[in-house]
Amino acid sequence: MDAEVRRDGSGAERGSGSPDVPGIEAVEQRIRAGERLGAADGLALFASDDLARLGGLAHAARTRVNGDAGHFALVRPLSVAAAAPAGADGEATEEEHAAAVVRLAQEGGTDGLVELRLDAAGCPAGRFLPLLRALRAALPDGVALTGCTAADVRRFAAESGTNADAADGIEGVLARLADAGLESLAGDDAGVFDPGVRAHFPGLPTWEEWAQVHRAAHARGLSSVCTLLLGHTEEPAHVVDHLLRLRALQDETGGFREFAPLLHEDGAGHTAGRSGGPASRTVTGAETFKTFAVCRLLLDNVAHIAVDRAAFGDQTAQLTLQFGADELAGPVAEARGAAAPDAPGRDELVELIRDAGFRPVERTAGYGTVHAYDGPDPDRREAPQPMRV
Image (cartoon, rainbow, N blue to C red; front, side, top):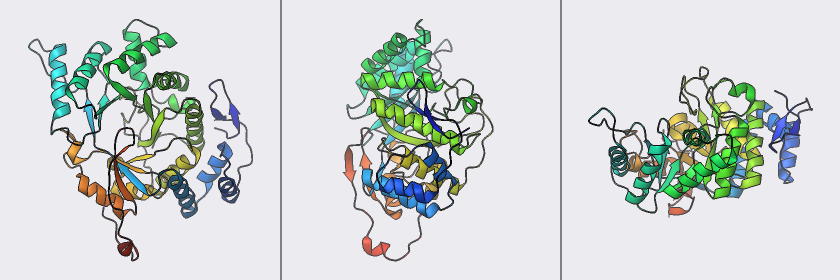
């Protein structure tokens, strides 16, 4: 894929042509002058092997937005389809399914829980909407209900008998989801928007389809998460293109509350259909840090960048906080429910953030503050200390 910036009908910046890629020094001058970076700048950042310099630029950018805060939240994941019990005739009734989902959502209590993240894959709209209503009625108001990818919304529209490509079909589904209590869409099916890369992932919506859903969600007042899938066939130019598309949509709507790079898993990954896709490849630590830095510097209008601690590993996740990330995401013992039995507790997560040199901040779903903890002991940080991993 090429690198010259142009614009297509979506309004997103895309790559074509072969401009001269500037050196890292020229890009740094543009950053320090407050200029917005483009595709050629993104490629120059990827081409640089000076990780310390990249980290410094990204860290300065994250500090301007988030200060020294290292965020985390008590979020409970729940697969709606997997929660369905077997009924007397082999299939649970709508009421039995709703009761089972509510039990799982409440498992272990809801004290401190700020978000229930619902995986709607495999659940028809006719069941998902009553489940949402049951959850909203059963859970405290402070627990946000989030979930549903663009692919899910399009599937719900098709199941309702409307054209999934029609604006009124998408908007109708989003209206029903919002009325039932949904507050934010998932972005797990973002993948990589380049059509050539996307062809390797059957079942993913195209960029135009994905953007249509999120644009309509933001217009209705639903926020959403945007993501990037790493570890398959993507190249730096694909990543830059992906980020600039998201940035253009955020300029238009302002509805993305968080961005999160994800790791591809063989045969599944974080895709809409949960099946298919190319084999995964190893993403090195250096590639991870460089990618987070480029994401922070290019995606300048999304305030928060999260790193999945469980996927990337504790030490790598800690270090990404120095390369633009401001949140350690992943299971926390106090919110894990039946999943992730080895998840760290709140106190351990606080120490992970402190040991990385940041001030832990437990957040709400909307990035309000639940509790701000003391930062690292400055006397302790004067001498080199081993990271806890």
